[in-house]
Length: 328
Image (tube, rainbow, N blue to C red; front, side):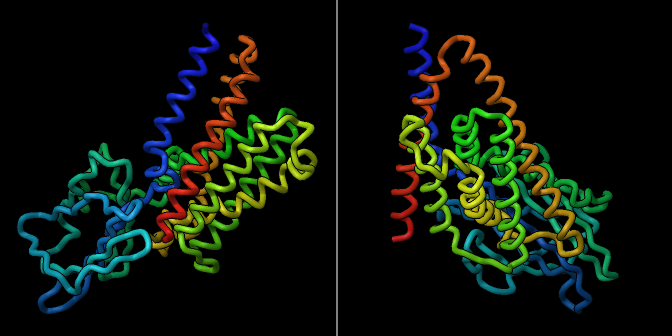
């Protein structure tokens, strides 16, 4: 009776993920508000606002400036790969005012704010759903905030979490698991850095479709008996994890490439973002280890693994078809 109840809960959870997972998988994309002070007769600040686009739908986030600030358009909005880009100007001193992002409270993303003063002084801020208002007169929080952004990006990147779950369930030997997770971490860190630094650039849509295929491959291997699995996954699973990690790194980079990182703290921000991802990944593995211990004590581990494998495969199939149709 309890086994059937567990199976029902797992299937229900996977169905819920199927309905909302495609909207969140690797889709944590922060907005970016860039403020640059200039010395012109009718203009005090140039404003660049990048409103994120998730699955071809813009997130309803709107900067609200002080009442005395008159915002005018410099150019028509442009549609980027992951953001709708606005160019504005204002004649008021934004560096001495507060800015609020309307709609942020009800979203699952953050907004990065970059302020560049006329004297060359640069500051970076991060606005979150629980703190949508920024007083630009206060001291800026440095790139340390990107650590939290990295954690959030992993939590809302359901397909990455599912891949980590698949690796955990697939490998029983702790040493082999450490090797495999390390290979996965190194590979997605490499492509994340190369993509953000613009050495490598691929369209997000086909990348996301191939990422879904990587989850399908891992789920299909997990669903088979050990004797029927491919030699690569049996003998050198870290090679498989390294190759697929390169793809997942490109998926992570989609959140930052068009949105941008502060140029003055580029390397530090990138490092902290990566560390945030790894901290979230370690947390997922620890939670899985605790669940595995509990299920083993109840004798449900084998049933859970099979159910999880089929559930992951169904989700990956749905994502692959859906993302491929978006390409067409």
